[in-house]
Image 1 (tube, rainbow, N blue to C red):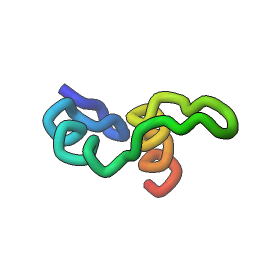
Image 2: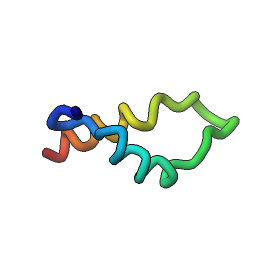
Image 3: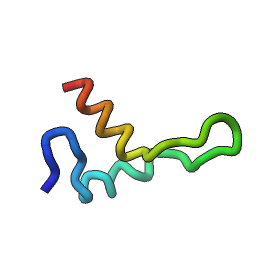
Length: 44
């Protein structure tokens, strides 16, 4: 069960395809799911 600001596994499977893969330029990316959960926390 997902908490208030965390996506469930089912919801993440739906939106995971919207994120692009890592690139070679710039800083290495963090976990996309964790970043999206943080954005949802800020918006709520």
